[in-house]
Length: 88
Image (cartoon, rainbow, N blue to C red; front, top):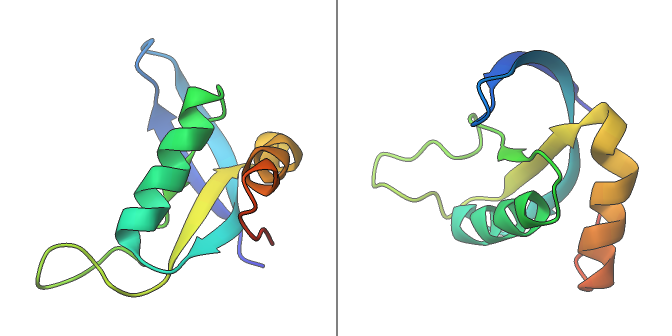
């Protein structure tokens, strides 16, 4: 499992360095964006691994990992599992 460390500026203006960890792999970028949005609506910071969403034609049709901060991973997995989404 790969952990990503990055600095994020949240809408509230707060800057935070976090360790991000993948909790699920979507079949493509569009599905990954829907899962990410679902997590954000539940109050869980989430993003798509930028290296997975790279495509010369716009939206990637390749699998994309959904990442959350390590301290939100358990809750993120619970939210996705409640919608029958396979988690890591």
